[in-house]
Amino acid sequence: MIRYLVVIISVLLFYMEPIFGLFSPIELNDQLYTLVPRFLIIYLIFVSIYYNRKRAMLYGLLFGLLYDVFFIDIIGLYSFIYPLMCLVASFIVKFIHQHLIVATLLSLVLVAVVETLLFFFYTAIGIKFMTFTTFYQHNLIPTMIANLIFILMFGWAFKYILLYRFNQKALLLQK
Image 1 (tube, one colour):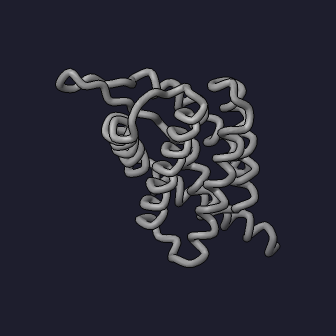
Image 2 (image 1 turned 120 degrees about the vertical axis):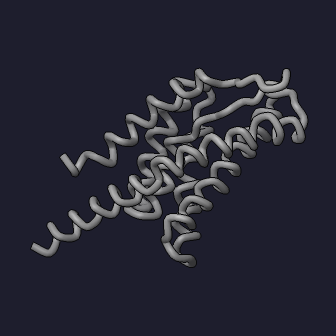
């Protein structure tokens, strides 16, 4: 069962994102704030940091393609961005310590990069019509806060599940 735990968590997070997306936008003081849950990419970043870069990129490609097909109808956008963020995370972690705080900050920065890339892409092809300031205030900041709460709730669990999985695999190879 532990063998499939990484994939099971990925599938659960893939299905949880649209459910939590139903709570968005939130209206505060006659302003609409959009919260975009990026649970799967956060988990994939943790997979690339604490478990295996190649697997994280493979899962990123697979789930990115599924995200493209089911949610946005532009094939290749998420299937390119998800593995790219896993690759960037694994390269950055080679030079710094794999501490949970570092993984949290790196995940938040990469989620901000994903959101900004998507904003520029959607603006370039004419899907979104907003200024960067509006995007920053009403989309990016609320998204970062929501995803920070998610990381604070589940980041430690992801780290220990992935390290446990990695240690189980190492123990089996030693036998």
